[in-house]
Image (tube, rainbow, N blue to C red; front, side, top):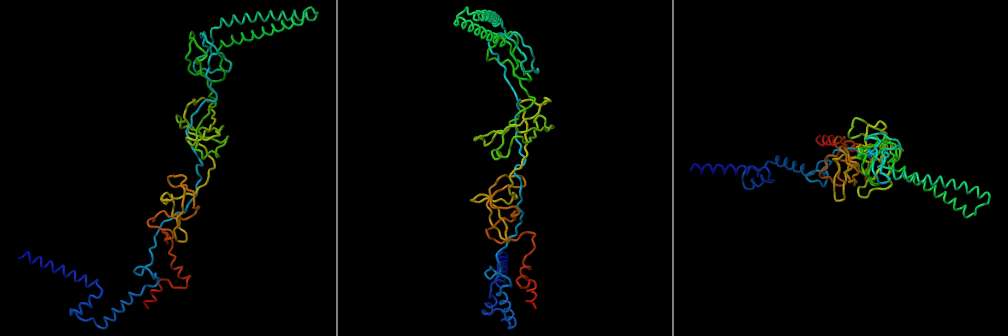
Length: 411
């Protein structure tokens, strides 16, 4: 019994709330109740006042768009803009390079034989033409002595022949044979002398000898490495740059270098060579710089960071937040005369605080960075922080500001 009473009371409360809502929000609810005989007829004054309110509600407020929904004009989005800037692309470029000696040779013997002496040690400084090792030369010495004796005899025959020719006591053909024999003897002597000299292994350049792997008594051939000599007083540093910089790097350009193993030292060098072709596989080209190393603090094979400075190409920059992507690629929203329009772009380089672009955008253009949602080409926007242009526009048109118009309507 008690449960039924509670349910009935709850039902009455729900019906009362529903009736109140219907009466409050349903147009003409009071008139319908009056026709049903519920409640009092509205007084003439009340009816007149209600009619006045209805008429006022039907009249659109001043300045409202005629076609606006509920008497309101189209929505104007508020956006944050930032002017496009400019930046020089890669005014400083860095690349990792490898050092090598300006001159480096691998010394090989000119013949086979046994090493009889090694006249230098590993790491020694040598001069061009200095003997660094010798091979056994007994056979070559004998051949040289024979050639020298034959040459001396040929020279004596040549002197006798000259006297006979002068006295016309010898035929011309015999005289020519003597001269030919003297020439052959001279050539044989030169050959024997060269063979004997080749048993001494000489340093072809000035430089420093590397670690030696030969000792006296070792048998060598013309393919055996005797020593490696390098002139590292000047280092050549090879590095590679992207192809877009191929026209910007020239011989003589200043290059700053820092050895990876010695980051505390900043060294200065010069570009001495630029390759004449681009590597199609990597899209890079080779550059070579020279670095003075007379102090000997660096070694060939070390890695160095090379930095070049040059006047690069200027590009327009935008805020990274402003870049949008569509079916046609990247674009930004540009504000012009309080309306937005698309500006198609090509991304050149992305940095932490800016994006370098090329395309339909100029430095100083107002680019939307916030409030991007829902923007459409030609849509009117309001720039955040900009003064409201409405009062100024109304005064120029000869009209009254909105506040003044409202005050006049109240009077």
